[in-house]
Length: 161
Image (cartoon, rainbow, N blue to C red):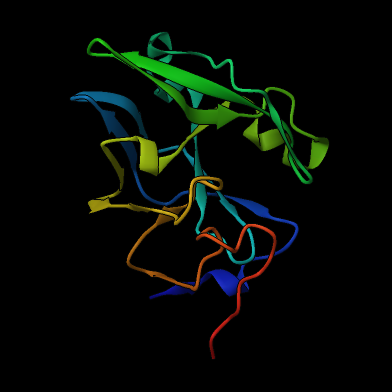
């Protein structure tokens, strides 16, 4: 069964993730959860938010990257990772105090698949959403096109019929 990202709502919806989530970097499992949340927004592959309790928090730290503001969820804080002798900046983000409508995201962390060695939903290794801004998790059951590729950041995506 496939999902079209063009059927996702705006404003975004937060729903439980039915598949186990795993995130790996430099031979280390950073996250492993069966309790993650999916955020579904028109034209975007889902972003996956993992409960902090299922993340190796001692490997993450606040990033010097400035926070950003989501019109729906609030102010995002970015996180760096230090693992296996390497430090990677802004590999994940969280909403420490999301707006009330997205309170379910409090205490959750979302990883950029493009900045990880591997991200998994169930047995499927995900691909990263095109571009370096949104952080969506692309799986074989998704239909696009997806916002995020160069030239699409500000709504310039054309849906093919």
